[in-house]
Structure formats: C-alpha cells, structure tokens
View 1 (cartoon, rainbow, N blue to C red):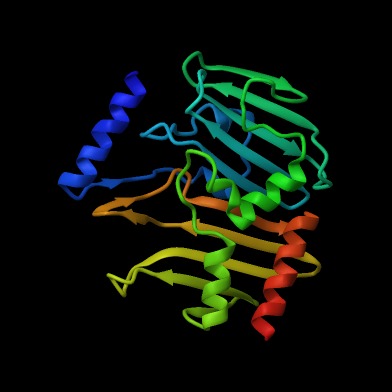
View 2 (cartoon, rainbow, N blue to C red):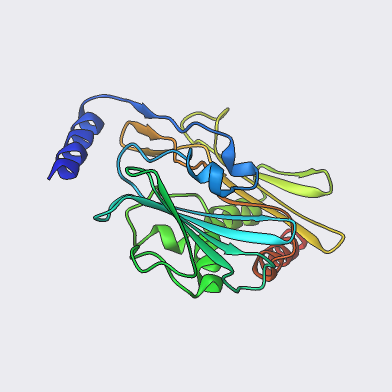
Length: 231
C-alpha cells in the first residue's frame, strides 16, 4: 500500500508540474564487483532495471528488482562470455546482506537463459513487459541509422544520437558501436525521456555498456549494425 501511495503521488506531480528525476553515479562504465553492488543506487520510484555489461572477457547482467516483495539487486556473472552462468550475486539493500549463489529463486525476473536476456536487453523488449524505465534501444538506434540522422564516425567506430524534438540541442539518447581486432564495443545510454511534462533520467542511464567485448551476442549485434551503416 505504501508503494502504491507513492506512485499515485508521482502521477499527481506529472499532471501538475514539470519535475526532473536525476540519476547519479559512474559505476556503470567500470567492472561491477560485489563491493560496488553494496553502493549501487535504488530507484526513486520503485522501478526495476536491467543492465548488460561486457568488459574484456567477462559479461554480466544486472537486475534491479524493486517492485517485488523483497527489494534486491542481482548480478549474473558470465565469466568467459559463453552464455554460461558462473555465479549469481544477490544483494539486499534493506538488510545489507550479500549472497553468492548459482541461481536466484527469489526474483521473478531471473532466468537461466542468459543468452535470451542479453538479446532482450539489447533489443529493448525486456523494458516493455516489466515495470522499468523505458530505455532507448535497438529500435531507436536502427531508426537513426536508417534515417542517416546524427550519425558520426569516432575513433574507428560510430556515434549515433537521438535528438529531443522539442530541444534540438539536447540528445535524449546516445549510442556507440565499434569493432576492433575482433573485439566489440556497444553502448546504449538513455539521457532522459518524457512523460507529459515530466523529464525522467533513468537509473542506470546505460542499458548496455560493452567495451573490448568478446561476447558472441554483442559481436552479432555490432556486426549487424556495421552492415546497416554500410548500406
């Protein structure tokens, strides 16, 4: 009941005045360890989040589950980026407890099919059926590429920006992808999106952050994007 009351209050603010929900922290671009999990932020409005990170040889999926009976942050570790779960970390912000497991039986969002989870985060489909921030994903990036709008070369890769139609100098989302020495960079960042007059800055701002990755699903995605740009 308490959570529902807070959500109702949020809707009232949306209708009556413009406000901004901010997201802080730079944890998302570096390796998220068990110690880092202890200081990751909770969302202000009990929204869940899904975050794919792949740095060098290791890939992980981060799930912020704040809408269930027990608030928790889960990290699924794929140590060799081979779609195999090597460890699962569960952190409970209220009790400050952290557990190391092989799977998670508590969160409704955990899945042992991490290959599908990776694809769903990249495509953005995972944000459509869960109570999450609406992250800009492949559909938006594909639109920018096909329209040949705000697409730039940078450091042997590509930067794409989705510009705010109301404020032409502001980018609502930014994307980056690159292939270098058979390794892949893929980054999706949602700076903000709008609901009525409310400007929402998601936590975390990244849905995908991959650097020098060897993950086959990241590789598959970047190869497709490079072909789309070449067209």
